[in-house]
Image (tube, rainbow, N blue to C red; front, side, top):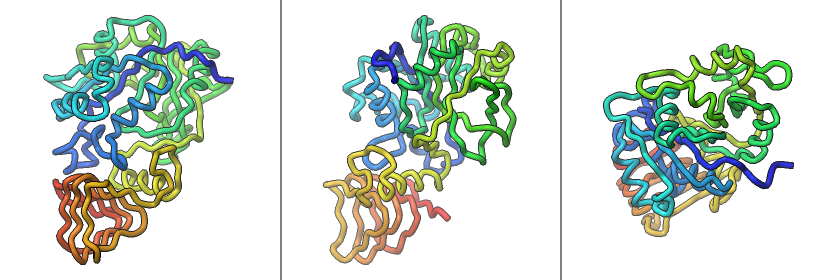
Length: 310
């Protein structure tokens, strides 16, 4: 049985990336602030982590960092404001290892384990169970792994020990991990550094392990995966959201003209306006978006432009 006492006090959440595959929308909104139903991904992630008793959150930011800072004050994250510290990589982006090393320094080099979570990953992992696995292996790092053939690259051997990182083989690193202080102390904090370089160093020491899970996971790094995430929540009921399996979510302040059609799975966000004759099918409409005409199927509709997802 998973431990009742998760002995992890802090989480590092990585939010500095540019999200280039989601441009042009990421020219206006950083990826961790993309809405998932009616909350940002960052809100969902911190609420999930907090539910496991983790009390301190360290976030790195670079691209559109001021929006992330603002979100902590003005969204549901405001209740965590005193527990959240943001490190802005102002001059240059530091990469995954450099960013983690910088957060470790910001957290004043704590002893023990930390939870690492990418700011663009939505999951339903059993964190206490992963922590028990991590402790039982005496691991420096436990990578949470999922089977996603297009991005598989982490190869495990006997006893779940990671033995190599090879594109096209093994499993996919989910963007969620548990790391101990010895590993964190080995990371730089003042230069660009990819995580793979340091994982491979510790793989040679036999201290990196892979925890494989079939629980829900989505890295919404493309428009297709972002739309698919909403389908899985609204149509399939794949996540324990308030609107899971409901088919549609329409914000109370949204206006839909009586002869407009909203079908399939759909999100109509806060203060959105859907005009007469419009058809919105299998689509996500962001808040403050005005749709004046047309049929929109498999689309992401925003104040910054519309994306048709093939």
